[in-house]
Image (cartoon, rainbow, N blue to C red; front, side, top):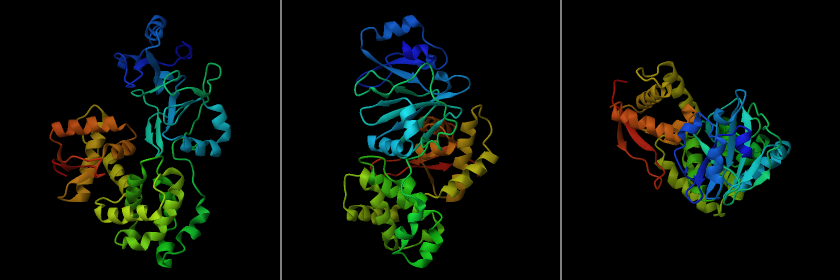
Length: 360
């Protein structure tokens, strides 16, 4: 009832599945009544959850939740932002931490070690519930307002070692490589580190993709990058279970030739810029038209070959959720805008491949 009275849109979820106990979409737009709240939770069968975004905000602000997948990631953020960590309401989860705030920003963002959630179509579970309790309680009737979640360390993984360590990291490399790569290497290392257990293998592959996206590394023998892999491995040690360097280095060398589309941030930015300038017409939802245009521009880059696009990359690019991208791609397939060539696979860590079937 306290959550309800401070303006949060509360729904009931099942303990064992985390799924809503009843239809909940309507509560994105209206509050349940006092009697409904009492009826749902009177016998302790359900765990409360809050609908995020502006549904549970106030005065134009959205309710955000930074979901840290691993307590160590939260501890790193707490070390960097001690004042905020003492102020922002924080709850434990079975695997990590949830940190809540209000913000003028709303949306969804992958952070490497979790997500920043803040859209009306999402909810998160609240204490009391299995493995959930308040570590920093809500004070009074409101939450602190964070205008820029990224500056507060909530929109990106916690900062790792400062950029001044670059000369140490790159010293074993040839000078031509070191001089050409210094603006991007530390950022690539920082943003590709795993956020918790069982993420090392995928993180190594993403690290390789990001390196291959740099022009000076596009055609290089991956053995020339051993020093950078070792630098990445040192920073990843607190987060991974397999500690020896050779296992990571082998995964890097095996993954390098399998990279079909380098992880070039500027490449994706350019694709998005062209798509935004010329979205595909005919859709009331502008993000569907933009997604279709992104597919069109990716197809131009690939020529006759199919292009790769995962729901997670699409979500980061269009600042939405993977589910929204999945639904949008389904619609484009049904309307014949794109054709699925090969479904993606978690086992092989490959995104789905498509052909844009309209004129490009």
